[in-house]
Image 1 (cartoon, helix red, strand yellow):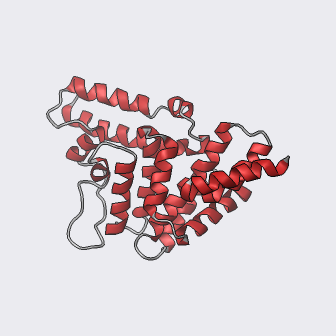
Image 2 (cartoon, rainbow, N blue to C red):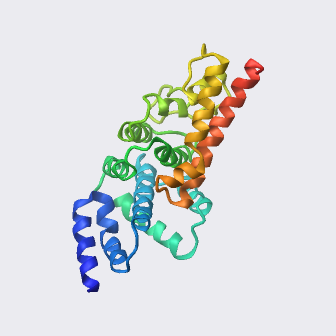
Length: 249
């Protein structure tokens, strides 16, 4: 019966935390229609993703025009139009003012992706884009990124490398530096400056393999989120080019 799946979805919603409260009934509806696990996972990804973006945008006390534009750009890059776009906007609007914390959403998301570092970095990239949208990173925004680093079990220092080595004085943070410095390029590749050419090439090939679209797709990442995998690969390539040019190999 049709109500059976919705009941199952409602129960799931009560158990799954902030993501579950949004998608529980939807999952039940999909269950009634015979939707497979991949579709359910993709829906959960969407809610967790835009829920996290909402909490990041709200972290400094208000959602700025620049942050909204950043989220809209993300939706555009994901190819969200029509009903999909409206659904994403609805998730964002509800999440920014709901009683759940950024930690709630991040922990939920970490459970969904099962601590896969490649998929985790796609979400980190999106959170970072919203955090820097107004040109500065607030201390609360930085803390959310660090929470994500811990929840996703990423290598300690991942966020500091992304932000260009940390923050200066003042509570509002400073504009992050681009990865055009040699020292930061080493951080992006997670290799020490005294690493051999062979070691750097090995790590570079490994990271390229980790962010390969086919490998990420096999982990269950929805196709539209592949954009962020490409972004991370672009950063790896940029860092490698900086090192390669410096070392002339």
